[in-house]
Image 1 (cartoon, rainbow, N blue to C red):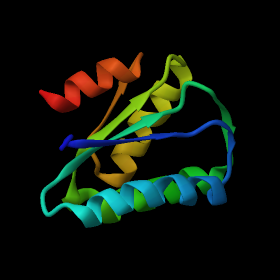
Image 2 (image 1 turned 45 degrees about the vertical axis):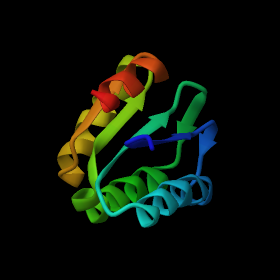
Image 3 (image 1 turned 135 degrees about the horizontal axis):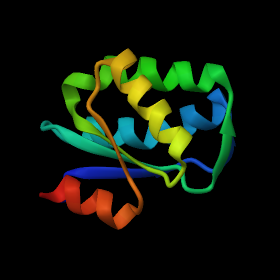
Image 4 (image 1 turned 30 degrees about the vertical axis):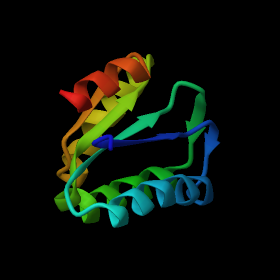
Length: 109
């Protein structure tokens, strides 16, 4: 079994869309006793609502004990800065990658 779960966030992210995507991660966490990595593919995401960002930070804060960390796939420089800020706000280890394959390789190591 893989030690990570991959979710994709596309188009404009709202809290409702985020909740649906994170349900997959919650299902994976419930199915395992050990920690997982979360890989979030945002390559085709065009933007997000501030409440969606706040919900993501809150979700990570509460799931931190169950996650090794979060790998976020983006090629946008600005979003790399946003990821760093979310990492500080949530206390969760977050790192960006250019491709899903690179994130999967990191999370499998």
